[in-house]
Length: 310
Ligand SMILES: Nc1ncnc2c1ncn2[C@@H]1O[C@H](COP(=O)(O)OP(=O)(O)OP(=O)(O)O)[C@@H](O)[C@H]1O
Ligand SMILES: [Mg+2]
View (cartoon, protein in one colour):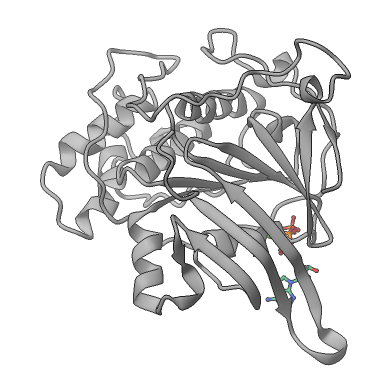
């Protein structure tokens, strides 16, 4: 690892909405560090504070108190323009609703973040990002000519095209069927293996289990889940946590697969994005089985975990 500052560092972050009788403590003294290359899932039931936390991590909102450092920079001290710059240049957002522009082709959608800074070679970079998610054979298709899973792949390519320090995915499989869910999880896991830093927010334990690390949020309080293998309860269950320095992702084949494009190029600001959509209530609590994992995936099944209160 680089040994640089954590990508994210929350110290005793509180977020309070309203006052008096309508006062809601949505986040209560939340502390969390995410290092470069980490893949962290944040899981919790409806109303637990996931969106509140996501908004703060994504610099869409600021804490009421506490400290949030993004790559060492104190977010609370930054002005709106600087926050927008972090949001646009350094975080790739993936949302449940995809947020693709319907009239634009896949590559034009992916190109959008680069347009904001008038980067050169935008088409090549967009095609390369689409190649990373196995969509190089669908680059000229508009969203309504793509399946839900393919649309989410386009959204992931759009998040990647700026080469962000963090990928923030809020219920990225919430609108997808089982097969597409497995494909998207495999892509996220593959991106993690290639060294990307990912924070995945979900209500579903089966989805969360794709991550190397799971943090649970309940009533605004965070607790870390510890892999079973680390607790000594069961041997050989945990997947090793990738620690390799970041390198370019290998393309991930689509079901209609063709040869992949070269990797994505330089960073650029993404388009302004909408607030995350609300998510549904908590899931089953089971780790993912084969149901969520494609047979041809380069991924391995995630580990079992238990929760400890920190
Ligand atoms: N703008 C707001 N004003 C007042 N209270 C709010 C506001 N936003 C969220 N809350 C409250 O803060 C708490 C956390 O809400 P949040 O939206 O973060 O939960 P969530 O985990 O994302 O839930 P869901 O899974 O239903 O989307 C809830 O009690 C909610 O009612
Ligand atoms: Mg929410």
